[in-house]
Image (tube, rainbow, N blue to C red; front, side, top):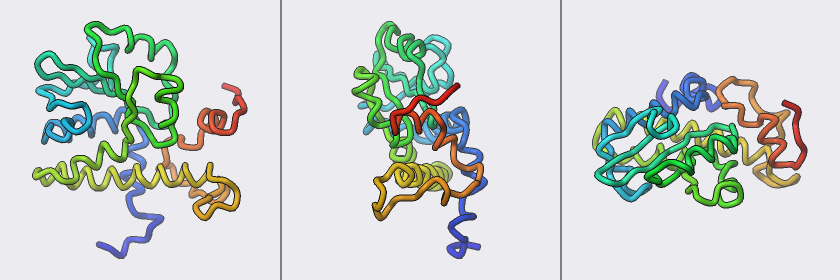
Length: 198
């Protein structure tokens, strides 16, 4: 098929796989195992260990450690971190650096709702492995970053102002299961200011 893949078909299987936060976290751990060096540009150090669901760090999606440095990466795909979960991370001792790796629609949450956290675009994080020398990590990074970037553009289009060139009403979106609850009632409630039930 190569470059002749129709846009609405490209990466739909990968998109379904990536629609789970646990799978995305597992992929990031795999990328890290193949080459941990891209983390230096994100957290300021190259981890010696990348642990999934670390029991000593509130079951963090990813716990990065090197010497005395630690960083917690919480991965979110359209879900909002509860105040209880956020508080448990912020109470960890010794205190790690805290990062929210999420879709671009959640960028505004850091600072407003979570001032002690640093936001990382999930697409940008995955793309950091696109220049690695490891061929598996490079290919996986390119494809996963492209899929997540598509979700970011799709969500952005839904919430773009009426009349904007990049506006994409929900009614025109694909019914594919590939998007991870990206226009869920929670995101919609947050963006347009009404509270959804549930």
